[in-house]
Length: 334
Length: 95
Ligand SMILES: [Fe+2]
Ligand SMILES: [Fe+2]
Image (tube, rainbow over all chains, first blue to last red; front, side, top):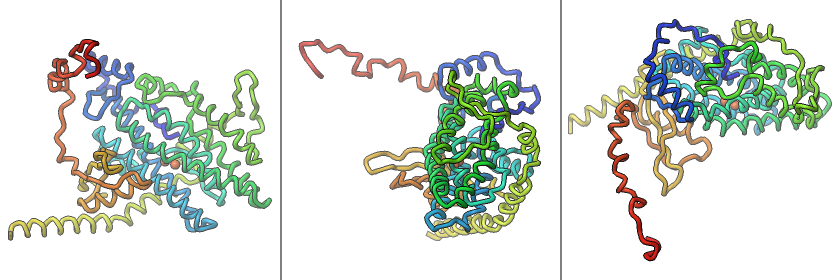
């Protein structure tokens, strides 16, 4: 999910694992007391690095995540839907900004993060490497992808790192609109003509599995999140969040009269959980490895946008330089 | 990419008259005008404010968290600054 970075092994050398034990202990005890860590506080190098990677990946996901929906902006069925979709996409750009800013407080520059994304060194959420093939995908994305994001992001509002937690509070306030507008599209299509309902079902069929893969590998296969739990960056395990999401979503699909594309999905009376069939982790690994249907398109689109926007940034900088030179001249003349 | 040269600004929003401006986040912009416009677009999309301040981040001088104990020591040791330090006899009533 947006915390997929936490499922990876910390790639850095062990050199900075030698920390001052007194500081390290004081740090952990603050975390244990649910005290927040702020930007200038001492923190273990690995904590800093994990958060830099995690927050940057989260920010990249928001930014790349604008593309699948941007694909339908000019073909929205009505002006109202277009205005709503535009507002939703604009929110995602804002989410990217809040998150880049939070990561910057950890001493990584915006430029460095951006270049990690553009060179393919940094990842973003696997979900955005799937295409959006019909208008109902806008409904399915809002409902399922933003819905899954909410499951993941609400606990992040209590993350031990203050700037990340605060950014998440802002993000979560806006996400609810995203999910509801998506479900609204699905409702209208599911209650529309047979063809519209078929489009809604098709969108659900394609979005379902990638959405539940967003939560990352099963707990039994992701040993790297233990440290993130101890640091209170992560609060719930991948499987717990996934289960919560499935339980919340099944009745919503039922209301729409749509079928979740999982023949093995069944309700467990004892646990009260909807248990899903086996997840195709090979597909997940392929998408993460860069072989999803749209990996290349997403990255090249971003690279092109940055290159084509270069003159705008240059012009803005030149204008600012000219204005400030003029202001200095005036002061000197006075 | 030349984002590096783009200064960082801290954004403060007053949500309504009668309340003070509050820090809400930061952004990059080449000058104050652009910083204000960007701040409006990013931080006040849902009527969060009626007034905005943008301050160059490098203009802020912050206290050092390492010296926190020492720096804020006077507040901890001067309990007599709080009204609860004084006992008022019950007969006197509310004061
Ligand atoms: Fe978002
Ligand atoms: Fe969203």
